[in-house]
Image (cartoon, rainbow, N blue to C red; front, side, top):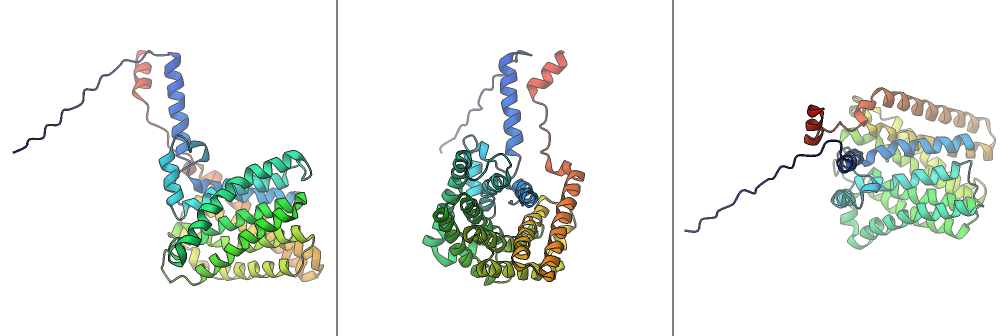
Amino acid sequence: MIELVIEKPTITTVKPQCGGPDDQIIFGKQSLSSIVTKIHAGYFRISLSLQPSLAMENNGGANRRRTCFTTCLFHFEMVKAEFLHRVGVNYLFAPWISWLLLLQSSPFFTPNTVCYQVLWWVFVTPVIVLDVKIYGQWFTKGKRFLSTVANPTSQLSVIGNLVASRAAAQMGWKESAVCMFSLGMAHYLVLFVTLYQRLSGSNSLPAMLRPVFFLFIGAPSMASLAWDSICGKFDYTSKMLFYLSLFLFISLVSRPTLFKKSMKKFDVAWWAYSFPLTVLALASIEYAQEVKGGLAHTMMLGLSAISVLVSLFLLVVTALNSNMLLPPADPPSPTTSSCDSMG
């Protein structure tokens, strides 16, 4: 008979020196790391939704998936888990989309400046890297894999390419713009057909994440704006993409029961309504300027009003429920407790 003996490790407690500089630095690092790692990727929905509003004036995971790009080196396992999650991986596009939109609406940089061009490369490079990762898997693993992982948030990868295409077109980089546009639209067609043909109940999103169905509107709306920037006018291709997004918008708003459960309690996923509606409103502005008809202008005013009201509503509701977004406070550490008791 073999007896397995496990020795209990000896734990040595070292009494901290209260008020020492080293203790303050370590405690500060732990607090910052704790706060950052508790910010989940879904919070990028808010920044993603606000950027098109800035562009209009000048004219983003599951709650349990938590990550931030600044923690990649220190929390590699968390980032790896985000890459492997079928919803969370798509929100890795959100910060780069937000910054590209902010770059296009910035009053400090014009498209013909070197700074604008350098920042475009800085923000687009991660999008291309993520494209290789995601689209490469779709291509090499085939239809069965795509039908398993595809969900409405997958359209964020397409939107990332289209936003980059529009920014490149504004700089006059037509070849880069067409390249990013073709890359996004080719995979959008594959994704659109896959999502249309999915079986009922297959890989269905949780009820709280159903607002991301509005991303069906965001992709064709952004595509119409990108093609408008490439061609220099809102031609028939841009109009067809706008009509598609308008049809999808009507299809969603005519089925309010789909979002009934998700609206019972506030969630950061509500911000998924704002970005697609704002991009659709921007596309309607370009459409109205091209068509110059009473119906087109009425539609422009209606969609713009809806976009503004939804954004204001989300700002107010988020402010009233800010305690749900802030990470919970860390319990006092033994070092802090002992120092407080001695003080």
